[in-house]
Structures are given as structure tokens and as C-alpha cells.
Length: 297
Ligand SMILES: Nc1nc(=O)c2c([nH]1)NC[C@@H]1CN(c3ccc(C(=O)N[C@@H](CCC(=O)O)C(=O)O)cc3)C=[N+]21
Image 1 (cartoon, rainbow, N blue to C red):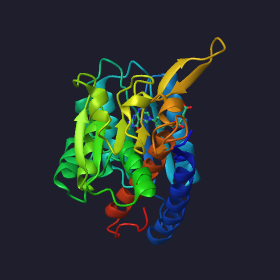
Image 2 (cartoon, rainbow, N blue to C red):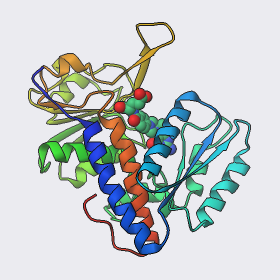
Image 3 (cartoon, rainbow, N blue to C red):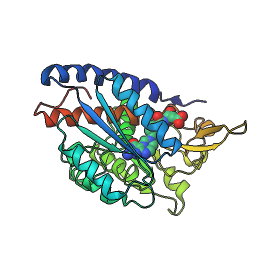
């Protein structure tokens, strides 16, 4: 392997430590900890694991973590009522409703009910709009924010670089493209139906893969020396029965022979997502308390 391995786990730990220090100052200044409320509908095992890591990281950073588990049969009306209560609760700075929601719920309506200034996922249309117009009040989705953090740490100034984002989701691809535009990159948004995708990817100085197709991006899709960010979290059957293994959207071993730097899965973007959730919660808390934005995040 010739590529540098971008250590998202270490970068996330460093960011979480900075958040923890600032969370302590916030509590000292306001007399209350910053607080994140998490909501999980149903018992999807993967969602339970994610919520557990998010809550543990929140508590470890010295913030309050309140969890609201709802059973799978909860009506959308009941969920919306809970969100209204959390919107009105002064101890709650951030609200995270874990996705996916059960099929009988309309995720767009649920997200639209969250106070945009408590929307630490950055999924509300108001925050998507703020990001699109460059309003600093935007709360930006955690995964693309984490990717940008890794890219800046690796490359410094990104201006003028050609970034290709594979994937056009509202939670990763689109906000990622907006962030890269904000850094003065030339941005191409590609997706699974893009014609001659490998040739377009080979033009990329920065390649962000967020399509959800295991090991789709091969070595010959990558410009030599490019920086590759793998957002994919694909769970495949493992070597032993009952076990699974995680692979990204990039064929890591072969890609690492060509790329200049690359994120692994696990240990790349995933841990940054959680660190940025804490960051967004602390930023939301400062704004709600009328304090200036915390520095160094
Ligand atoms: N409202 C909402 N907000 C989210 O941010 C959200 C969500 N719903 N639904 C599910 C996805 C997924 N997600 C991840 C967070 C951390 C890792 C992570 O830490 N991954 C580790 C490995 C974890 C493992 O082994 O499973 C890693 O990549 O190293 C992955 C995925 C947040 N999501």
C-alpha cells in the first residue's frame, strides 16, 4: 500500500477531547450542561448500537444525554408530540431522531417538526437551505462535516481541486457537495446511473464515495495520488456464521495502491460522524445561550 491511511478514529478522539473541554466551559458559564435528546422508534439492532455509541460519546464529553425509546407501534402523532415537547424544553439543545423510521411514518414530516436550531443532524430543510446559501447559522449534517474535517487536515486548502462525490442523498451526497463548493472546489455530483462513472472518478483530486454499494470503487477509478474518502458502511456476511464484516464503497486494498491518501472502513468516516454530532450539539447550545461560537471546532 502506498497511500496514507487517514485515521478517522484518532481525528475523532482529538475532536471529542476539544468538545469536552469546551463543554466544561459552557456548563461553567451557563450553570447547565449542553444536552442532546435522542429518539429511537422500534428495536432495529443496528440503530440500537448506533444510539448506544452516540449516548456514550455524549456523556463522555460532559454533556447531558436523554434517551426516548418508543415502541415500533408508536403513532406518528405521538412522535410529533414528543418532538414538540423537546423543542420547548430549555435543557435540550439538540434533538436526534434516529433513522430509518418505521414505514408508517413520514420521515420528512418528522424532521420538519424539529426546531431547526436544535436539528443537530442538519436534516431540516431550513438547515439544507442555510447551507446552500452559505448562512453560517446552518447546522450541517455530521457525516459530510466529518469528511470535510478529514480532507482539510489531509490537504489544507482545497480551493481549485476537482471533487467528485458519488451519491446524491440528502444526508451525505448533497450537503457534501455544498461544503466542497464552499471550499472553492470544482464539484461533480455523480451517482449509480452516471454514464462512464469510472472515467469521471479518474478526474477527481478528491473522491468521496457515498453510494452504499460494497467495494464498487476500484483501483482503476482513481487518479494516482488522489484523496479518497469512503463513506460506505456495508455489512456483509463474515467468515464465521452469524458474524458480519464491514466494508466500504471502495475496494480498499487495491485503491490504496493508487490513492495518495484514503480512509479505511471501519475507523474512517464513521467515528467522525459521532464526533461531529457532539460538535453540533455544543454549537447549538452556545447559540441558544446567546454565547459566541466556541473556537477551534
Ligand atoms: N438521525 C440519524 N443520524 C445519524 O447520524 C445516523 C442515523 N440517523 N442513522 C444511521 C446512520 C449511520 N450512522 C453512523 C454513525 C457512526 C458510525 C460508526 O462509528 N462506525 C464505525 C464502526 C461501527 C460498527 O462497527 O458498526 C466505523 O466506521 O469505524 C457509523 C454510522 C449515523 N447515522
